[in-house]
Image 1: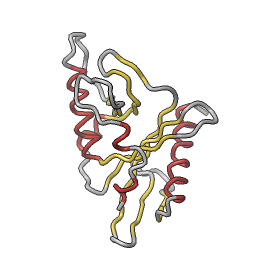
Image 2: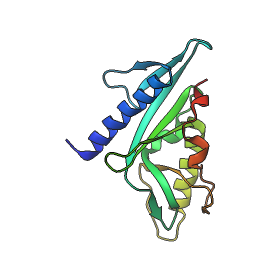
Image 3: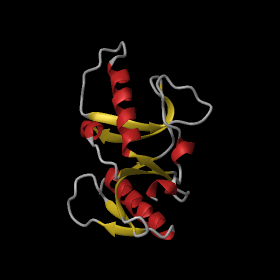
Image 4: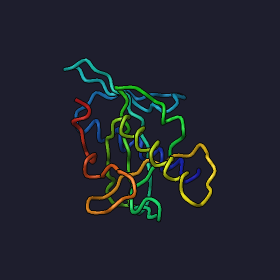
Amino acid sequence: MQIEKITSEAGRFMAISQLLLNKYDVRIIVGRSKHINIFVFMPETERMYKLDIRTTYGNPSKSKDFGETLSWTMGSSEEERKDSNLLYFFVHLHEKGKDARFFIVPSETVQKYIKKSHAYWLDSPKNRKDNEIRKFRLGFAGNKYAIPTPLAEDFENKWSYLE
């Protein structure tokens, strides 16, 4: 099995585990549902949230264009997903045996960032060609970034987005 598939599945189960441990009513999707991995039902408010779980593994990435960040690969279709009940649940897996980190980010934040960052990437002097790949990144407080970058500390363990 490819490492990407293993990482993705591990992140999915870790996310579900965290939601259950935080006493959320989780509905797991079995089968082929594009993008949506689980639903979280809030009986108090009768709201249903759709969670798109994305997982990355390893150390933060460093690039000349975007600095030091945690990053997740996405597709260009993510730029147009408009749904107030959609949240992204980003999982960052460290080295084997270390704790994972969890980030809950509203879809609007993801959309805005991937649009801006892709436009910035295309406008670089390197004559880059457009493609379907997008990256969502979370930066770190104290670092400077060429474009406004959401910060990890603002979204880590933000269970309040599910209320």
